[in-house]
Length: 199
Image (cartoon, rainbow, N blue to C red; front, side, top):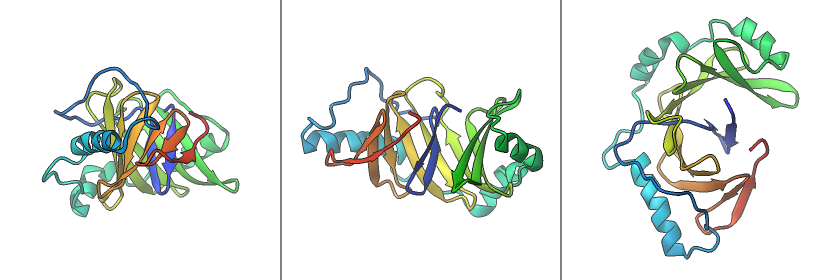
């Protein structure tokens, strides 16, 4: 797992995808700051339609979600994985790990199984499932997208990955959150709102 992104309550992993009939293609050019507002709104709308198509159900029923992911509701190797991650191990022959710390306390970690790279499972510090990223079929080829679901089955957010450098981020209701270009996130009005490390 190359990158994990924590954005105001939405945790998403770089290089994620979800099958889509409406895939935009072309070269990657970023001129967000110099575009006029009509152009920016058009870009936002294009990716929003791909991620949140008309009449598309964006949430799972809780029972459906928990049935689909029942073998992942608890990290079966929690104790071993916890020790590995506390010792800064980021990869084994079967999986890749990413850890999230707050004041030196491991409060969440993610596992991407090598035999299942289109799903990423996020667990709290006690090994209980919190989120699942579902990645589109065209992953790892760009463009692709990711949708993240809470363990209740509710959508937490979505990202459209145009390239390694360029990602459009949306809230669960389809509202545009921002566009990442390399280490900077800009809002719909081209105002710089966030920066990130580890890009």
